Structure formats: structure tokens, C-alpha cells
Length: 203
Image (spheres, rainbow, N blue to C red):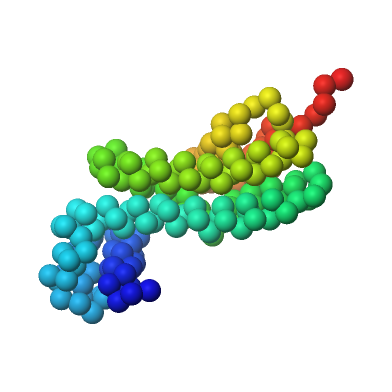
């Protein structure tokens, strides 16, 4: 990584940490510069203004929340050579994404999608990242359809967006855990996903 790219990445990381700790209002350009070890004017070499810095950090938060989830899942699912292998991949990824330590990532997505309502730049990036993520899952769906493991009468991209919606929908239950058994929610969601994905030949 070049020095410039490295500095830009460090500025983004420092801004992300500030947002995680106190929201967008807590971001101070001077504090971000200090955390990275550069002078404040250097920040404006990479970002037009504070707003652009915050937008870039929010977009990066959103992108990271998906990348570590989809890359290993797609790789594992595309190596499946039977429905059982494919099902294990699906169960494994959903068990991982529904683990308590990933609740913060779903909260981040909710936060960034909220910020997108007032920022065209964030909104455009969220749409792009959503589509990239769905394309990754759609490739898995298409692979499963070609193998005869995934229902063939539903659009692969629609299946992908629906599956991602299942993942992000858990945030509603996580907001009220005293009223919802999260383990039971996981079971309902995973069985629903597998029920839709599993192809059954008509009798």
C-alpha cells in the first residue's frame, strides 16, 4: 500500500472508531488528524471537508460489515458437491452471522442506512454495496439451481436479496431480547431460508 493510501486508510479507521464510540456528531477533524499523527490540513488532502470524511467512513463501515461474511460463504458453498454439503454451508454461515458478537454489525448497517436518508453519496454507495453483496449470494443460488438443490422457479437475485433481508431483519428481535427468544428466532429464520432454497421435484 502506498503512503498516501495508507494515510487515507488510517484516517478512515480513526473516523470509524469515533463514529462507533459516539456517532457522527463526535467526529472532530482535528482529533482524527491527531489520532493518525498528521496535521489537520492533511485530512483535507484526502477529503473535501468533514462531511466527506464522515460519509467515506460510513460507507466503509457498511462495506466491511458484509465483506467478511460473504467472501468465505461464497467460496465454501461453491465447493459443495451434494445438497448435504450445500445445506451445511448455509447453516454454518447463518449460525455465524446470528452469533451475538455480530449484532453490532447489523446495528452498523441500520445506522448507515439511516444516514443514507440524508446523504445522496451514502445512499448511492449503500445501493452499490447491497447489489455487490446480493450478486455474491446470487452466484451461490444460481450454482445451487444448476445442481438441482435450490428452487428453480424463483429468481436468483430475488432469493439473494430476501436472504440478506433475513439476516438484517434480526436487528428487530435484537432490539427487544426480553420479548424474543433469539435462539428460537434463529431456528425459524434458518429453516425458512432452507425451506425456500431447497428444491423439491413436483410429484
